[in-house]
Length: 287
Image 1: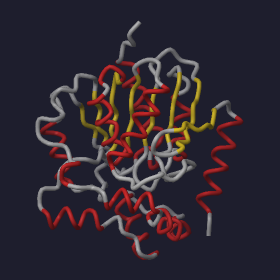
Image 2 (image 1 turned 45 degrees about the horizontal axis):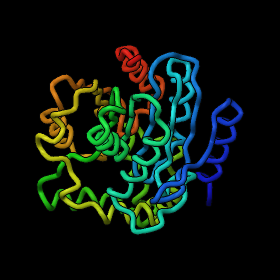
Image 3 (image 1 turned 90 degrees about the vertical axis):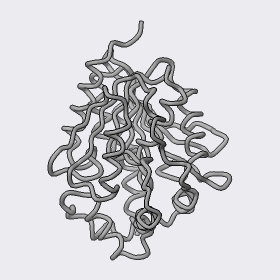
Image 4 (image 1 turned 135 degrees about the vertical axis):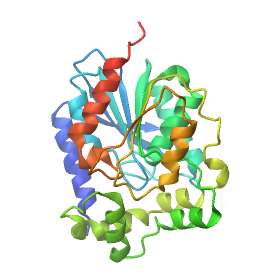
């Protein structure tokens, strides 16, 4: 069954018909696919970064809505995800950040609002720490990267991404969403395939304690920060939200919507886009 690859290509065709460029950037890590959408607004550009085993395609409704406010919206497929090529070498968090940094350094000609979901949230934070002059705002949906101090709990957390069969996939859908979507049984085999991709397995196997954020590491961030953490999120341990509340700078704002799980851009794309629009509205773009 290859439903998701077909959906990827259908989404691509629809976006291209609506004036969005679908193109590739060569990086030292992989050939990276991105959607580049010109906007009609005057507000800062927006970058959209997805989570592990996902892709840029589910951001399509958000991307389309933001084009009315922003001058440009970029949605990036991580190496080994979506329409991007597979990594050319063993693939861990450092190599993922290297690929994202290469793409954004090349593409951004002015500071952007960087949006990241889950692992994409961790990458958004890492990029903002390394390139603060290129990031004028952060919106983080259930961001990854917070430490899980107990070794047993950390091992259980990482094992939760090991989907051996459709039963595991259905359980993952239950953790991912507030309410399991009707299409979950149909996509369960696809989810097993996605989490079994070499890039995904390599990423998960490469995560070590030193990849997690440390107390004090985030305090220097000065750009506006909005965290969206659905109250029904059962993918990332709740202690991780507590870490971000404690260690992000005091100006960071937190939104915890009801009836939303790990991926607000999928479960409530209208509300998520509205959150991004509010972030854009509060930022005075440098002249």
